[in-house]
Image 1 (cartoon, rainbow, N blue to C red):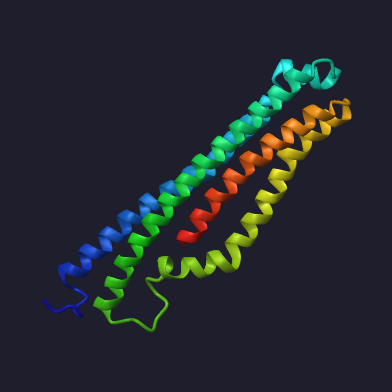
Image 2 (tube, helix red, strand yellow):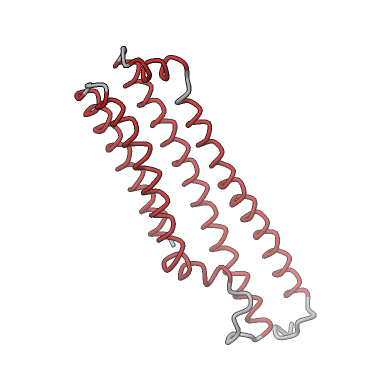
Length: 186
């Protein structure tokens, strides 16, 4: 078989498989972005009657503390689930890279930038995407940690705020170590 003949079955097979993997990858991306809607559901939990009443009246610190902890745990579960999807997306991207390489080899186009999406992703991720993501999550975490702590402190429940902050920081460490595992894989 002539590997440099662009009309051969080899090229056709590799291109079709790359397209198939790209579609799977795109579906994971769309699914991950739709998970952001789940975070809205977590926000809706703030409106949960017992919690919102406790926050408004400041009468039941245990309900506020447990409610805020439950919301934060749901937030962490959703973001960890999304992180698992991201790791799968990165796996598919790695597989796509092999097909891009095979296509570039077959077409003998090593010096061109075509068929290099998967190849170029780590550089783009490190130079652009990670910087935006860290800022996004910094703002998000400040909100989901600072808001409950501020509400508890505002009602004079210092120990409840400390308990919430300790639990939130422990969960945040778990989240950050998982993020580092995914980033390391890129």
